[in-house]
Image 1 (cartoon, rainbow, N blue to C red):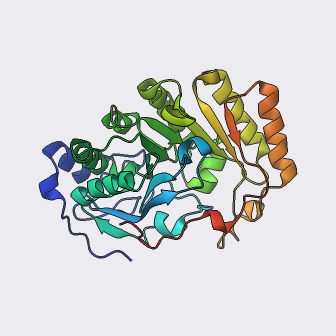
Image 2: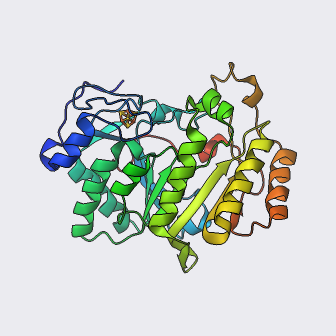
Amino acid sequence: MLPPIENKNHNMMNNQLIELLSNCTLCPRECRANRFNKTGYCGMPATVYGARAALHLWEEPCITGKEGSGTVFFTGCTLRCVFCQNHNIANGSVGKEITIEHLSEIFLSLQEKGATNINLVTPTHYVPQIVHALKIAKQNGLILPIIYNTSGYEKVSTLKLLDGFIDVYLPDFKYMEEDLALRYSNAKDYPTIAKEALKEMVRQVGSPTFKKDRIVRGVIVRHLVLPGHRTDSKKILRYLYETYHDTIFLSIMNQYTPLTGLTDYPEINRKVTKREYNDVIDYAIALGITNAFMQEGQTASESFIPEFSFEGI
Ligand code: SF4
């Protein structure tokens, strides 16, 4: 488990950021935890914790680029899906403390290593600290596009804190049915929240812009197809296409990996079949979706889940 809470970032924060973390309503859980002396649903204090900061080659090609995406995996999560592929860091059991100043140095170090971009993974509960670190890093020469890689369970007011700092939003859209959102993520309001969040993301960064096949601005929405839930996948694709047409990209993923501990959820305790995935892809094509990434071959493998050994932290 993480050590007792001790905030070492106080001197790096302005009053507004301290206020946000003292009565935390950053995500839709709205715990109102004072994260300087306790934790809320996300399980994380005011101090930032991370598990890995390294070049990552397994994102969509326009994000990975040549050398890899400069991915920073943050510890803790506001959603905590039962099938989480990164459960060790989502539940807070793997993490190393990072001061705000060091976080800014991590961003710069990834830039020096040739990263295509800075990719902030599961950042929601650290938004104020990240904004602060980005300000420092930009003053010190950070010029890479910044990607906000999120579950999609985001409050519009928190996203507004990021306006001007994020170039590419990379949200999931996990469920359209409230029952599924409740069963797998304990968040019945996920569909409503994710829709509003996506609207704000598109407002901030607009249509996708590419430079040499690399995305530098815009929104890519990821959808992970779950075993046995093709109908929900199709509802999501229809909603996204009818609402946004070609102003966003979609990434339709088949890499769902059933990990241990899913005995209470037998219906998703298997991989997605080729037939299921192809059916969802055929539906997307029939709808007229062209701005989309899809995965070929058998990508449901634990090898796609990186090792969280504090590399680069
Ligand atoms: S970020 Fe964490 S503490 Fe803050 S409202 Fe969300 S779950 Fe609660």
